[in-house]
Amino acid sequence: MRKRKVGILQQILVHGFLIIASIVTATPFFWMLITSFKTPGEIYTIPPKFIPSEITLKNYIDLFKGINFWRPLLNTLIIVTIAPPLSILLNSMAGYAFSKFRFRGRDTLIFLILATMMIPGQMTLIPAYLIVRILNMLNTYQGIIIPGLVGAGSIFFWRQFIKGIPDDLIESAKIDGANEIFIYFKIILPLSTPFFITSFVFAFIGAWNSFLWPLIVATDESMYTLPVAVSVIAGQYGENIGTILSGSTIVVFPILIVFLIAQRYVIKGIAMTGLKF
Image (cartoon, rainbow, N blue to C red; front, side):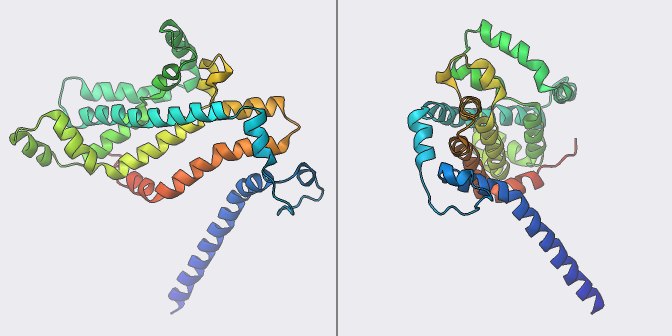
């Protein structure tokens, strides 16, 4: 009986801590959302008012009408429409090859790919920029999207997940006359649905949040993405807090919504990915 009481008390403490941590984490996002609907007078009110007495859309109207926020939004939507599917396709194909194909130097090659994860991303910016410039892809969607499609971490985790798919299924399909393309699209991908969704969520977040690379490649304002545009707004309209927060809200909340919708699959996909080499 005493052990049961202790267990209940521990659960209460753990859940209480998690609730408090959730409130502390969510408060800045809620404050940003609420403030984006405040009038300038209420934004600078001291002491600050958590709930506004008057809700206005002026900050969002100024954002899209006065600062032309439509173009960065369109650019970001195009990028997140193209980049995640291509990223999943390339990384999963590489993971399939490294997990199910046997060829000389396979393990050495995967070790070399993983070794690239130890190189800071900032060190590859200049070589990547020079390659993109030589290929005449500066200030283009190709230049923004292509360099980030394949990642060592994504290939490794796809490899680990696909290794858990029984080889007997693949061998049976080959006996029935299936080729590698059929096996990949009809067996590997359908059985990888949890990790497929997980990869899509991470690729979507990465493409939506990308800031430094688009800032370098986009030489014209017409190719700015949402994070870059918000940064420019913060520099040029620093006194207009409402407009800045409305832009930040548009950048942040789609990611939260996507993650909340897919969190069950994300947790399942990560849990099903073994780390045995």
